[in-house]
Length: 431
Image (cartoon, rainbow, N blue to C red; front, side, top):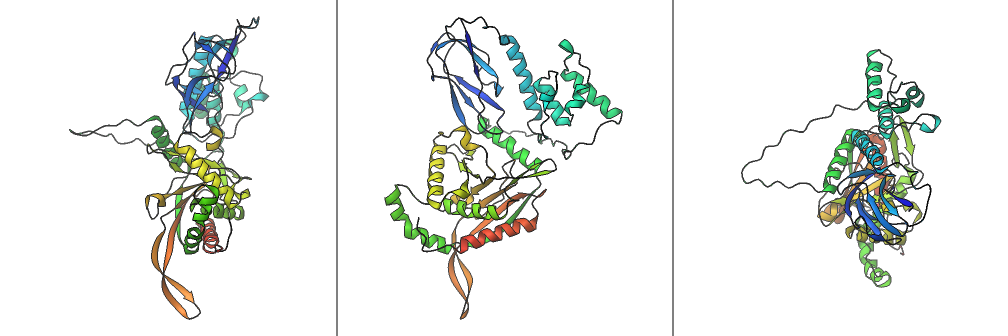
């Protein structure tokens, strides 16, 4: 019988691994095409892998709870067809061994910013994923790697070979200058002692990943936060005027969120340095404006669905996208590509009545905007008859940014422009 390989799929940009959470089928059970075999989870979204073929599940290569790199064979299906090339793939034991090595590589380097990728296709030698990961992390070029004498099978370079090379390379003073900024020494968290009556709760998988990502972001980017207050009285009055008609016509609510998204997209077009990423000493200015929407889940965790090409949508289109993504995020119905590819993120502290806050950058972006609560406050207005005090709706915007490429002046100009866009809202606008 021919065996069909079930492979861990690529779940979105920057996702390199997934956790097997539950096998839905047991070995020996019959599978139909498109029938789900296994549930998997990433730091972005949970999903199921369907079978591309009819057949019988003959072998599973990983257990529930295992972390598996994308592109790895996780199961074999007997299709019932004769195939002389049935054994063309590596034996299951070899596949397992290779994937354990890949997982080790991922765990070793996942907290490091990945340097520019080496083009290993230029080399005629085979390098394991672990060796490639170490080479990328340490800035070893393919040409340099090709010169290392391997002690493995058929002269392959092993983990010990490359580590020994690095040790000798540093000792002999031949180490080349890395193009990457040196990583700060890893800080050890203080030990926590418990006392009688304390209740210890283990983090779930998503909360652990969020925690790791937050620490990574603070280590990668020097965060600075700037604040500005905005008079959104016109926006509040306009929304109150159109919301009932909009609900009746479209069957859904119009909130402040799409208004903030539209205005932010306009400001990002004028300040492309904010819609960017840092790659070593290179600045990547993004062509597309894909704004992520930080969304709180019922269990207290966080997910960030992305509205792609926000600047190309009108206010109605942005509103539809915001409502759709928010609803499906809370019901765990997002697709993998809907939580990847963001170039800028907006988070709403105001939904919990917080005035403002200092958000953490969603890597590899260079800035994140936080929207505070809208409150009535006394404000000084300049009129032809002189200054007057009036009750206005005021909101605080805060933006955390990567000080490696975004200086305070640039951040200030961006926030000032965003303030101008919001304060000059057209009260007669039709949506």
